[in-house]
Image (tube, rainbow, N blue to C red; front, top):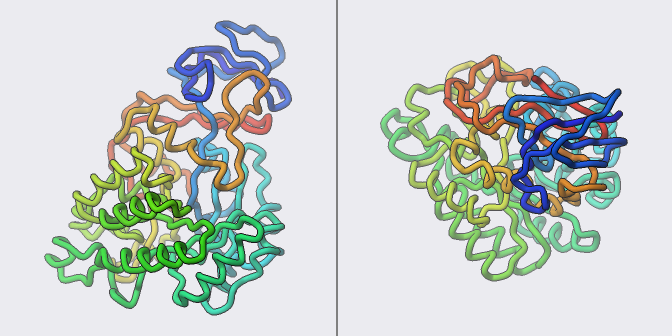
Length: 417
């Protein structure tokens, strides 16, 4: 398929066309021409209001549900949602039933994606059934396409298991991920331990529950070497720990959820379960420090932490509601409300090589892996903006800035005009 993108402002710091408004002609999945005005016949033409284009975006923490939890989300609809939210690549969690903990599971998930415009990079579970007892067959899953190993939203209870895993995967440059959460400190924790939890008499989740595991895991990493990904940190102390670890030269990678960047704990005053997420939304002081740390690169990635939850398990009383919120559809608008657009694009396209994903500058001869968007549109995000099968979106009724049209990738166009 031949594609002609008309009058698009290119946002790509690695491209000589950065900041320029150009036509872009794509043939057989590659950029063949970039010029002020290109005229072609028998092509799919894309001509959209205030069109901007960047390299394709990456989200490092996405859950769908399939296999086993299709009532939450299917791979088919989740893939479409990701593309229409601007993502050409997603890291898919093993948050399924059963969990992805074998070669066959990895192959199954990859085979179920029929959307050419989206590349799914699955994570395999670190331990069998994510039960924390026995290490899964990491090398087999790696050879089948798993880009890392993670027991979703669980810390590694046995420090020796984490030590062994970090040592083992160095033989094939594997990536271990571990969630910083010591549940025993807050067995029935519902929200951040702070003003709101005290006021309403709910058990809180203290910062200590995150920081104590983070500090332990960093010490193990210092001992073993290798690299470790800590997803979705949420406290100012965690930022300090990560910064110090990087200064020591440790290969530590980390992310923050858009929920923790955009909201603070006051959103929980009305017991709205859409804001019941893990890690919990914390104080305004924590939020501001996270915003700065992401901008400065202390935190490597921002993720939607997209977690669809079916209505029966979400729209219930606060205590029994499951943790999680969808976020693919709103992450760009959220980030674009906090930072300048150029910084947002830098955040969404940075460090893809950590997952073996190539960065293709917008230039002649490059693979056309592109996201299309309008950064100027301001609007109230509503339920109608949620494309996910589950509607547990924390951003509903929030004003955000920026509309995503879709993506062009692998010679395929997925856009919503």
